[in-house]
Image (cartoon, rainbow over all chains, first blue to last red; front, side, top):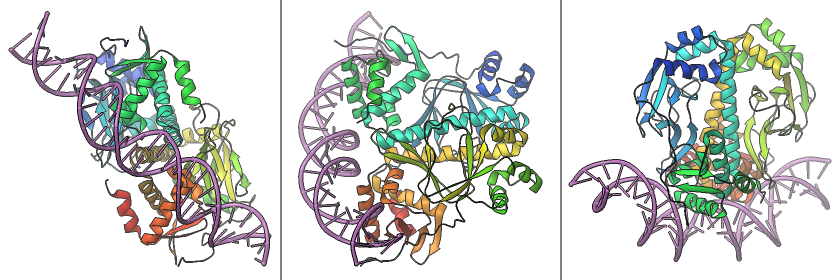
Length: 250
Length: 250
DNA sequence: CGGTAGTTTGAACTACGTCAAGGGTCGTGG
DNA sequence: CCACGACCCTTGACGTAGTTCAAACTACCG
């Protein structure tokens, strides 16, 4: 009955602890907010970054650690999360190559407010916060783009708050799957594959529910024929079906 | 049994539809991110703003309207909210004089993503988005401070997401009251008064619950002696009690 | 002093969490 | 290459925090 197959998820990674100089430059060029700069300017900026590799599951930093660095992902996936007293984690974001995280502003004190964990083995470029801030004042267009990025994230966080405040678990999960597909989707013979390892636990952390509820909802979606799934992966086969569920008003 | 009195909430407002030129300059000087500029520079910036007055309950704009302006509050209180299909509103922020809202980035398209409503009669200063953006590139330190402000809001939104994901209604309400008190609290003979009209409905919109649940929780807090309340107002009489409830881990 | 809008409280209901047990999938080591 | 063990997933049964519906009550304004 169920499609039985190995995980189709495949994240490209070179050797951990190693980003070639070419890769570094390629990444920095690809980062949206550096796109206006010349090759020389980026090369100059590149010198201020140092690279760090992490294995799957490693923590880049914990909430409460002194906040010193800003990271840009070169390869792999990183999740930002918060721990709760009851031991339940809440995932705030799932980041892909080209995206940044870490400290940016001094406004929230000098401690990281959330924890960053490698979801796959990753290569990240790190820069000292103050160095990054001086880049921003040096190149106002870069500053503007960073502002736009942060604004977009605020926008997304507000959308999440609305979801959590007013939608059922089923709809939150449908919406989350659609977002993940838009960000990480890759055409594949099983459907539009969400290209990252994703456990029911993690899906629950993203949608403010429990692994059990996530599993029940996922099972139901699969019965409806909207998705196909396996251990740590989900692919969407009927976007319209999911979208309809996500949007229906009580 | 209950303390019976008139609403202690008193928001200073001059005539609606009227901000004196002195008030405008004073407000602009008071806005954190203009604090480094000279009086002349601010006077120059002032010319690009035009003022708008609104009555209590008025909508400044609706989600979906074309996004053209950025606002800075001179007097009064404004709430940012989103409507849901089921007619339930979700409040995202409650803003006070000196704070800005509206469009800032072009990143989220050219439509407002949320609705802004006057909670009291207000005076607001409005500026065209592109004009504001050119101020930001003209004065990099201002741009940096705006970035810090937006980062702080993102931070706050993440904290809210965590709350909604992992805390009971009782704790969310306790936490929200403490935040409101920190932002809007004024010493008063009834206690630390939250200086804004605040219905159970609005408290519910802020904490992702229903007016009924908000009322029950508020009643309980009052029985414990931590707060005193009336129609549309709440004052905190025992911060420690509330803090303890907010922090206790299951 | 009456009316309106806000608040309180009760009682029934339900979506979801919790606890528990069993089954599937994958990687590793023999 | 197979088999074991760890981890992940599924499903059921039950409990409960919080919603919903409804009805009274009360603070405040004109």
